[in-house]
Length: 94
Image (cartoon, rainbow, N blue to C red; front, side):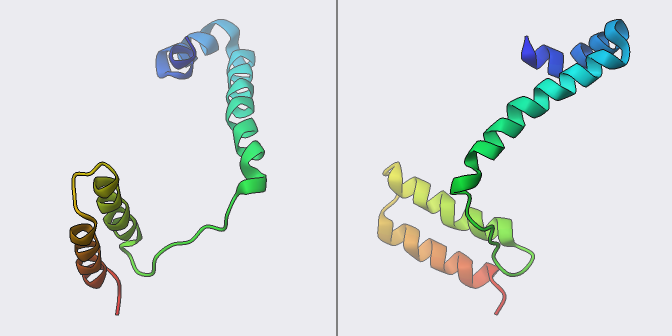
């Protein structure tokens, strides 16, 4: 039900039947649901970091994906480490 109401057809129905009040109520409910979870996590939040250069996301994925394969026992740790080292040399600026 919530997914329908938050989707384009559900929101259009709210606006059509309740005019501005419906959209405002929907927005308030959405902000309360998402905002409360964010605020609850503030005490444990850590500073944001990024790898240098334009390939920050690729660098993160090049670390996380091999680690996941090791945890799932689909790759040997030594092979994963060698692959990560090779990718870091390729992706990170010198």
